Length: 286
Image (spheres, rainbow, N blue to C red):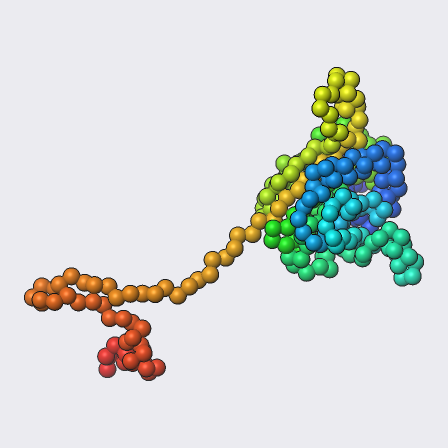
């Protein structure tokens, strides 16, 4: 294997089934805990009032989610199957403890089309080996006028730039993710018929008059700027029903040599008089 292939394999995003255990351990670290808290405050402050009844959540870590940040009545979480699948009894116990509603492949969700009002993807596009397929599938299940909330790593931050050397010196899958720029994700959403309504690059606590030291401390808090949050609404143009036009007789001007006006015959009346015979016979042809 050449060195170029070796480098490509180092940056290759593995299947989520293979990396989910390691990612769950990373999300329990102090840095990830602070970042998750900032993500939750961002959603609670700006997106908690999204309208709807059903909320679905897809995440890369079973024990870390954003479902409680929204006010929708019915909320559920789906997770991918873990590597080395255990017995059904053990899985049921783990699912109950982590409040997982079901196990599913994110590229083929077991949900009907146009059924979910709000769908939340927590770092799913980052760590999915096929993010396009996942986004297409999620767009299928979101109802018209529904909302899609995306949370991912911002590649144009200190944490995002640390990914490139991190892959070379560490085998931790946290560094092996897609560096998706915000503008690129917005383009994908636009092609799928979504309109971006909210966009946040990290989250900082509101302060009416921050001093210089507060601003400097904000730049050093990498966990608050390591992510982005996007909210988009699914726009579907309604189809205009085709109606039968009511054709009216057209008055013609007087013809040369004739002292009266004429009008075109009403085709519908002629068809009724002619009956259901040969169409040619209706017009007097032999």
